[in-house]
Image 1 (cartoon, rainbow, N blue to C red):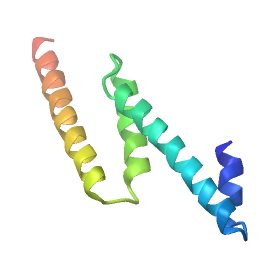
Image 2: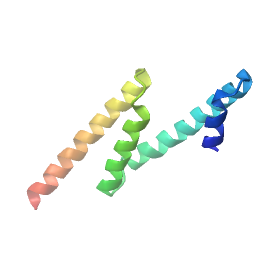
Image 3: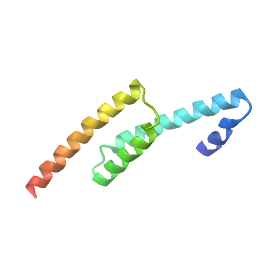
Length: 91
């Protein structure tokens, strides 16, 4: 579905372009929700993959919403690092 919309973004019709953009944005919003949910996964490798994916999605943008997401992400990463350090001190 995404590939089909992506192919039609360069269509000559402005209506087709707008509809494809609206569809792609909705898909991206859903993807972000999944990525953010997996930041709290119990498996650290899944968490790190979610961070990597989030950075790939957010890299090109830099607006206020993205800044809030990155702030939230940095807090989660700090907590994850603190928990990892705490766990390593017991081992």
